[in-house]
Image (spheres, rainbow, N blue to C red):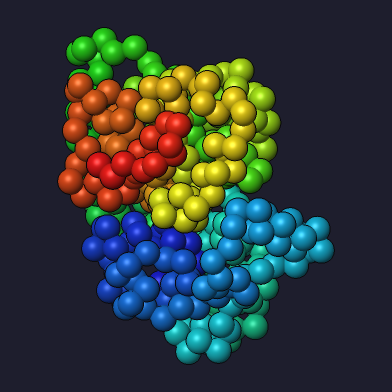
Length: 315
């Protein structure tokens, strides 16, 4: 049986979702449960277990990038013991996860050279294709098609209902980072579109970029979703003051209509097919509550921000 190691949380999630976790022998420190409690951590980070603000994280990663250093490292002794046949890695973002170049350097010293497969999705369709890539590499291609067929039932239901009721698109701003503010990119604009919204500040199929606050004020969207990469809603909640302190905050349409939400990062910036479809389901219910209900399994994945008092309402 093949031995698989995942250097990417999204790949780990999909391997579990497709019922292929018995072939998984190593993961990263950021992989989701139950993998963290079941599999050895091969990839670590010097910032692991530190509770840092978005400003601190941005400063540290910017300095590391400028110096050409990586904050991630591989437990080469453990990897040598595992002797994997395949390692899944990524080249989408060198900040969020260990990249292929760093991985290649680590495996160069291994006695047994594994196959290195980089997963580099840019769009939502690309993310779906990564599930097929993973399953095909493992020799279980049919698992991917079964997995994706189930997810397509959810998205088809949402799209059919939106078309049936001819729902107008909601104007949305989804923020991937708070300080500095980043718009959303890659597959997230497609998620928003499938949920019945449009983000005019987004970068479909490309990197998210620093976005001036003045641009958000001019755009004045109906709905604001705040989902910083790597942050839970509770972590993001600690930093909302960085947005609410702007003098224009109370005047925003989204704030006045109580349409500002915090959401867990994995629904958007973790590109596993299942979590992104969950993100679409959540967005559809937030955008069009008259048509959709938030699934019980996602009730704990978001918080609504109240205006003026900045108090938080749990669903």
